[in-house]
Image (cartoon, rainbow over all chains, first blue to last red; front, side):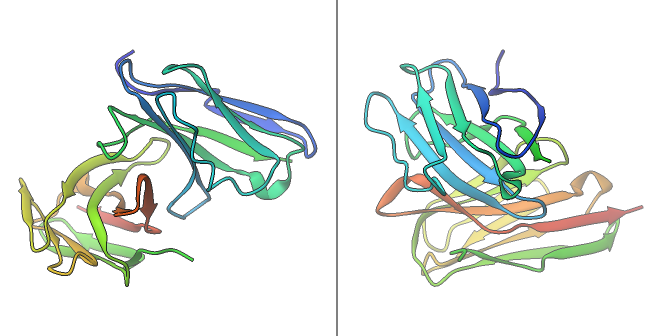
Length: 113
Length: 112
C-alpha cells in the first residue's frame, strides 16, 4: 500500500499476557518511529530506527517494552507482561530520513483487561 | 512533563467563525509541525515551519512560528464543519532530530 500499515487495528488481551504490534512503513522510508497515545492526550515518543544505526530507545517506559526492525522494512513493538496502564493507541510513523516529515499509520488500539 | 503546551484544550465554534490555537514552550525548537487527527486515524501533517517569524498559509489556515522559535499559532478563518478534529503541535529540538515532542492537542468542534 501507499501508506503506513499497522496491524492489528485492535487488540484486547488479559493483564500479564505478551502482545506484539506490527508496522509496515512506506517503501523507501529509512526512518521508523513508535509513539503511544493515551486517551485524550498527545503522542508520547517511544523509539525510532534510522537505517542500520542503533535505535534511539530513550522513550521506552520500562524494560517490558522492546522493538525490532528488519533492515528498512517491518517493525514490531513487543510489550511483555502487559498491565492496565499499557492500554492506549500505539502509532507508527515513517519518514524518508530522520528530521523529514513523518507519515503515520492509523494505530493499534490496545486494551488490557 | 510536556515541553509543548497547547491552548485551549477544547474549542467549540459555529461555522463561519474564526479560531486560533496556541502552542507554547520554554524550549527552542529547530522546527515545529501542526497535525490534524480524526477519530480512529493517525495524525496527518498540515505544515512544517522552520524559520523564526515564519508565516505559512494553507487555504483558510495560517500558521506562525514565533521569532524566538518557542511558540506557534494556528489560525482558521471562516471555519467549516470539515475543520473538526484534534489539532496537535509537535516540535523537534536541535539536539534530537529523530524525536517529535507533541503537545496534548486542541479538540476543535465546528457546528453548522
